[in-house]
Amino acid sequence: LNSGSLSVANAYHDILRTSVGHYKKNHISFQDFCLFHLLMAMPDPEVDIAFMLMDRNGTGTITKKDFQGYLASLPYYFDQESEFVERYFGHGQTIRAHQFSQFLADLQKEMGRQTFLHKLKEFDQHR
Image 1 (spheres, rainbow, N blue to C red):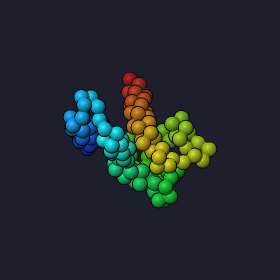
Image 2 (image 1 turned 45 degrees about the vertical axis):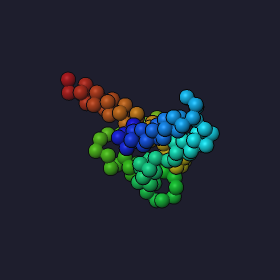
Image 3 (image 1 turned 90 degrees about the vertical axis):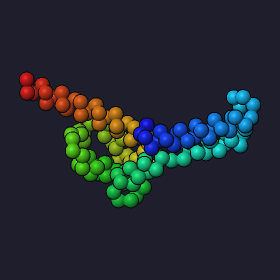
Image 4 (image 1 turned 30 degrees about the vertical axis):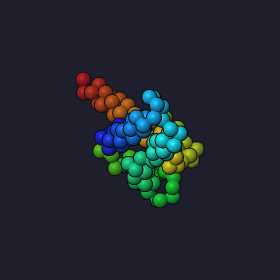
């Protein structure tokens, strides 16, 4: 969680805790549960912005070409022929907005993994 997401989560927690205080101990009303569920289901604006930035053509999908354009802007190495790229973009697949949160989480892990392996390879070459 980043600091923005953490503050939103804390605000939601405060709403829920306050609601519980008005009723029996450890219980909330159905209306309060519905409100809390609605708030938690709202999309993260940071994820929406990231999707729009990666969707270079504004088509509502991220293609392999869009993703490669994004990778070209990165200051570090990312293997564009990796299993990760094949899993998400092989056979003409695209990423839609509702899939993007999971894609972004997986991408973050993959970037860390690939950076580590690339630096390890560089280190081994200089030994």
